[in-house]
Amino acid sequence: MTSDALAHLQTDPVLAQIIAETPLIKPAASFIDVPEADRLYLALLESIVSQQISVKAADAIFRRFRMLFSETAEAEGYPSPAQLLLKTTDELRSAGLSFQKIKYLQSVAEFALANPLTIAHVSEMTDEEVVQYLLPIKGVGRWTVEMLLMFVLDRPDVFPVDDLVVRQKIVRAYDLTETGRPLYKRLQEIAAPWRPYRTLACRYFWRWKPLAS
Image (cartoon, rainbow, N blue to C red; front, side, top):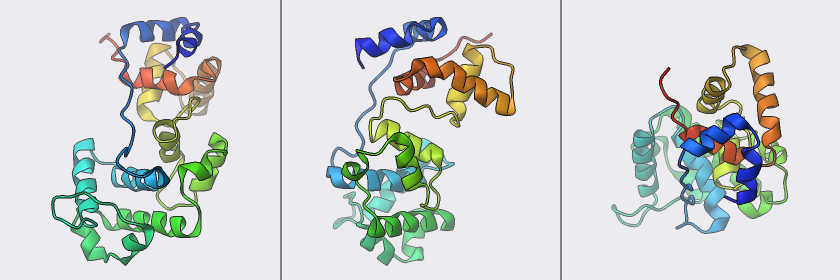
């Protein structure tokens, strides 16, 4: 977090008030125990495991998934793409994965065998180029890639308009009444002045706890 970023965001009086009343904790780096070349790949696996379930359940399932690739029962390893594809459906199901998520994880592995899937490879791409690069993976949508851009690739100007929490918080903060496409247009208009620090703005909205009306 830089003083320049905060000063820029605080030119929006609504956001300035939210910043003033919201403590912000820097998120922990993802997979610091994993070589950088594997972090994007592993983050994609984790993002698929965590889809549509609670954080607690996702953490437990992903831990059991990683244990399938460990030399000891207590350790948490992680598979190479080839190792993942060698696991049977029954073995992967034993970690608590649904059939659909197994297919999605296998899609990540297949993509990684056919295409570079490293932070270094995507580092020169624009945010939108990263989105388009990863969208062919089954189970990976725009929101998933935007979370990777924000928390794995540390991109500073991502605005995940499809994120329900961000959307609801902005609607609340700015007393918006639009719905559907007009709402999405209005959200983009509100966020435009936050460039090039929209990632930081969204982190404040995620942590902001509005007072009950």
